[in-house]
Length: 66
Image (cartoon, rainbow, N blue to C red):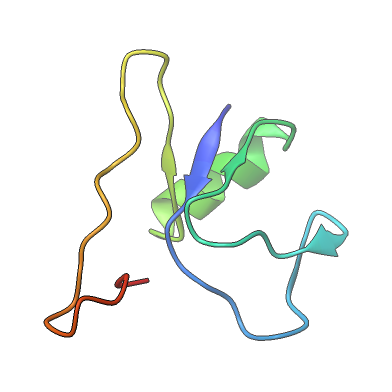
């Protein structure tokens, strides 16, 4: 299952033994049960071959809203 990280994690957080990826990163080598749990927890979203990455939102100051 391929997922895209949608939420940042606290410093030092790990995902499957590796440092937590930045928001927007695509991860495709996780066990399905782990990936499904992250999607259900709204920490990630499933990536399908048809779906383009979501557009980045901007804050009122013009900085990337992450």
